[in-house]
Length: 321
Image (tube, rainbow, N blue to C red; front, top):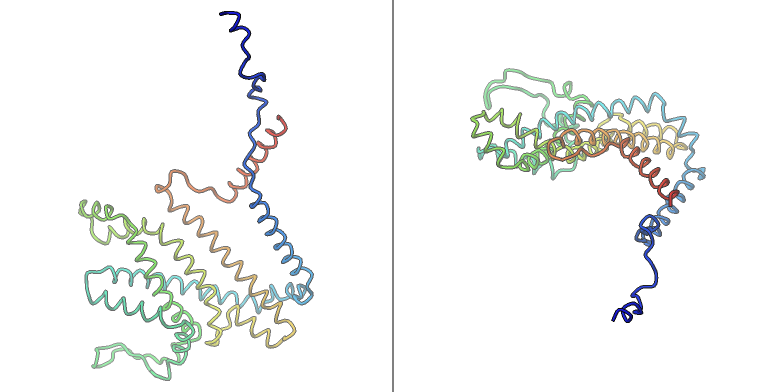
């Protein structure tokens, strides 16, 4: 019996390799590599075309990029955007509170306002305000259908800057109202009930409990609106306000041979402005993510450091094998 067991053929004639010598091969993704190669080729073609095509006139682009006329228009764009963003957000908060109010009058008025300004194109609003003096020579404050206490000359009051800011603010408030209302509704109902159970005043509940939590949902959506507002300022050129786009258009009419580089200048500045807003958005979202996430999302610098650390670790592992 012992001899038969000793003469039995083993199940495996090869011994397993040591664990240190074994290597786990990652799963191959040929489709991903092919798509990446195609994307790199397309990007290289675009960059090569931009760099070598003389039609773009990059020397004229460099000449116009920091010209005082362009910078003056850029400053007007920033001023209009800042005033319109602040006024539009404040108006949006009031409209959102009105829509969430228990008063049917406030809800109806807010709904009609939002419906109207989301339906009418922005250029129509600006042109209507620009020609508002043809309808009303003077504006007054007083008793309805009674005596007026204060009277204003509309033609003196409505400068080009005022018309641009008012038109953009009215339009922005309609969209901001829905963004704010959606953010408030995203807050868990238990937060409202807990604040009410503590006996906190309604205003305190909104400013210190509900609205800070709603900002986490409001921020990305309103930043999208803000980016659209930056680009929407290009329409104020039609109400005789020379913003960035208006300055480019004016210089393009004077120097018709430089239309393309001037348009590239406007494109570059709009890209810079929207990129700055996107960076601010990231850090604002990261700030309001505290307490909602277990760990905050890494900053771009932290992502670069982590990528370099992982790359060094991978190289060392490959060298050791």
